[in-house]
Amino acid sequence: MTKQPGRVPAADSDQPAVDAATPSGRPVPAPGAAVLALLALGWLAAMLWSTREAITSAAAGITAISLSAFALPGVISAALVAGAATALAGGNLLTRRYGDGATLRFVGAIGAGMVVGLAAALAINLTYFDTSTTNVIAGTTAAAAIIGGAIAGARTAPAVGAVVTAALGALVFVVAFSRARDPLFDLFGAGDSQQSLVDAAKWVSRTESLIAGLLAGLLAFGYLTWARRRALRRDPLTPTLRWPAYLLAGAGPGLLLLLAEVIIRIGGRSLLDLASALSEADAVAQTSLGTSRVDNGIWMLFVGALTALIAFGRTLGPTHIDDDPVVADDPSAAPSATGNATGAGTGTGTGAGTGTGTGADEPETTARDTVDVDPARADPAR
Image 1 (spheres, rainbow, N blue to C red):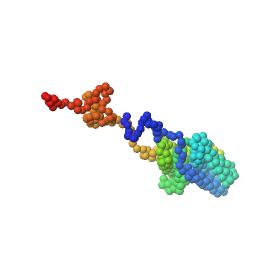
Image 2: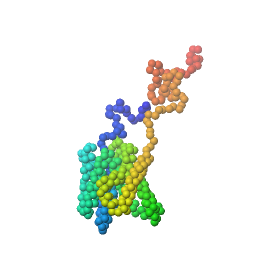
Image 3: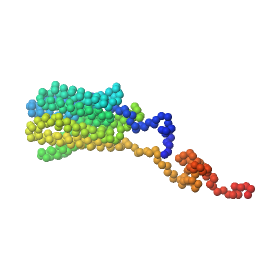
Image 4: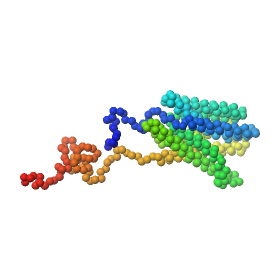
């Protein structure tokens, strides 16, 4: 193994060797967590307000039940993201004030999620109509916020911050994409027949999921890249995140959508059953919407993970190995017949080491000793 210039072996150094890839034991905070928390809470408030406006505008109670079932997925997804973002901001504050502690961080994350969930449930009960569906929406929203806070209690805070950023961007995109649904329906051949409408709706949903997954993967990669550069500026010995973190961050929004669907089908089962029992068309609509949400979550999971992983792979350079064997192309670099010289030229060796020979008990020889000379020139008397 060759010695690299400027590097001191650990055995010859007075200080212990420090490896930049070795974790220091202190978790890296999620940058911009306070801004993410404000944005996520604002999005949750917007979803609650839009749901309230849709329900209160319904003239009949039956229509309010149907609209509540349609609006529930958006509220649950927003509560998940808001709980996670608020818990991230609270975790950063606890780490700066009380130091590192996995238990303290997890308890604080759950506490932050509970605060968000209770506030959302209280707002729903105070502003919505006092019906049986109101309590279902409030309870399910509170549970989603608490679960989101528990997710943010993970030790790898930058990865959770990337998931929150990507999920928030994907949710905003889905709402904005609704304005382009009608032109896309015409583009995909929606006609007067029921089958053409179903086929067009399927392609519109896949297009939405594909674009949302690409956006989520790029946002996750961008956030993790920013977090890595920020951490290295503060501490050059900060360990860098490996590819599984980018893979998880890209797949995170899709996983959150699938988790939201599980929460909806468990906590909001009574509301979905009420909406499905209104008519046969409502039952078909609820089944179709549930299947579509699951498909969207799966598409976003795989597309987002693949996008973030490919973006991370493009930043990798070739691997450099320090201890590559030195191969001599010059035939003169081969050892001489005496087996003592190790250099590539004449005189003492100039190869890997600075010694002049490899034999332990044999006398040193040089290239001049091995050259045959003329006897007449060697002995003037002759």
